[in-house]
Structures are given as C-alpha cells and as structure tokens.
Image (tube, rainbow, N blue to C red):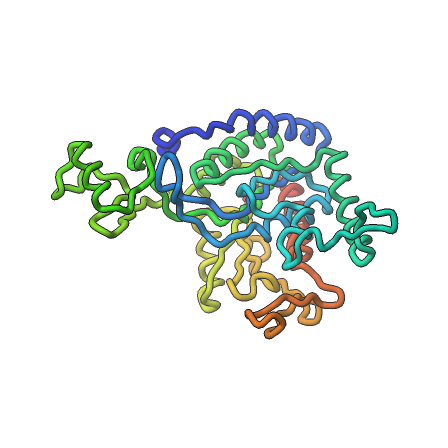
Length: 352
C-alpha cells in the first residue's frame, strides 16, 4: 500500500511489535488460537501538534466485551484498542452511571472494602482477570489515530502469519473513512482569528486569492474548511497479503434495516473474507446478522426478557438502563458461533 510510504511510522511501533512477538511466539508453541480484537474509534488529527481532531462515538463496548468471551472460549487475545476506551474486565465498572467509589464502603474498623451487594460479582470478574494475567493470554495495545491503527494492524498481521489458520481477526474498531494525509497537515494549532491566519498565510508566502498551498484543514475567513482524503481500503490487503491464512471477521453498522443484509453480502463478496457481522445502530446491543459464505445468513438475538431495557423518567433526563433479572450480552452468543466456524475453517484447511 502506498499509504505507508507517505504517512509517518508511529513512535511506539517497535515497542508494540516486541511485546506482540513474544506473546504470539508463546501461544504458537502452545498451539493456542490467537484472536486480534480491534476496538474503539479512531481519531483524525487536524494538526501535527494536535489540538483539534475528528472522532466518532464508539466507546469500545463490543470489542471489550467480545475479548472477554474469546478468553473464556480458550483463545489468547491481542486487544488493539483506542486509548481510554473500554477495556476487558474493568469495563464492568467504568461505563455505568455509578462512580467506582460507589462500589466501596468501610468496615467496622474503617478499612475500605467492597460493598456486600457487589462483592460476588467483583470477585468473579477479578478471578477471570487474574487468570488471564497468570496465563498471559491477554495483551493490551493502545492506539489513538487512524494512522496508528493502520500501521499497528499491518504489523500485527504480519507477526501473526506463523499462526496460520489459528489466527483470527475480529475487526470491531470503528475506523474512520477519511483522514488528513501527512503532507497536507498543518504543523501548529489552527487559529480561529482571521487576523492571525491572514498574518500566517502572508508570512508563508501565500496570497489571499490562492488556496493551492493551504493545508487540508484551514480557515477561510471565519469558516474552518476541512478537505479530507479517503482512508485506503485495507481489508482486501489484510485478506490477500497480510494475513492470507487467518480467519477474518468484519463488521457493518447501518441505520436502515432494509439495506443491512445487502451491505453485508456486498462486503463479503468484495473482500472475500470469512464473516461479516451486521448490526443496526438502535438494536446493536440485542441482535446481529451473521453473514458468511459457508453458512449464509443467521440472526442472533438476545431473548426479550434477558435484555437490558431502558426506562424513562428515572432521572428526568431521559432513559436509564435497567438490567433484566438474568441479562445476556449479545457477545456471549456471537463468540461461540465464531469459534464453531473457526474450527470448520481450521479442519478444512481452506481459509476461504
């Protein structure tokens, strides 16, 4: 891809690669399956010394939750996540309406302890986290920008090639569709003042009637103008060149239910990978459409009485989530389906 010749190599790439290489080598020796789970959104910086950037709404819920179920299913997991998005295990206590301190109290001696109401749940989560640490089955690697994401993904895919069919890519990150190329990025903070921007353009030799040499994000009078390039379609490269023997799963998020199936089928045909998981914005926490060449289409749905429901009027500010008596996360249905399909891929020895 020409992209990597013209966009900067992340400073932490070598550090990420060194840790990933040791992790992959260990699990290759142990013949364990390794899932690379990508999670969270990708930023698009508008300046080299970044003050302003474009972002999306993804908090990384799907990726963090899925990583836990992959670990439960016996996989080792490389968790490539947007910095400060949700993490496996700690997610249970970082995205609720409660402050983390609400889970704590003092005992009769004044020592800080977990409140009895939450003690068993926290003990269970801690046990799972401790097991992953003890067995070294979870490697957490952060990224921030779409540029970092693409560099890390390519590097990790190449490192995972010795795993062959035991490698799996679960691409749940919300990757930006557009970006600012390195050669069109302004160095310093974009000034909102017309006076400062006029002085800067004149000092750079630009005249007021020419936008030819202006960066992709710049001021024109009182307006901020952003001229973005499309992010290269990396999925075909991943399938054909970076990870040709691994199982590859992508996601398709839509708001119009009438086109979801068609868009999933189109992506599957275009990129020739294994599985597309389609979901609708409003129902993504309760149902998904699995589309594969081997199995066709299959809906997975959490039963209505096992879903987290929304009830209005609890705070006067809209809807609050109310858990079912015994709630089910949709990822607990997705990952076993994927493991079965992955087993078929490994057994047949035909990645496509």
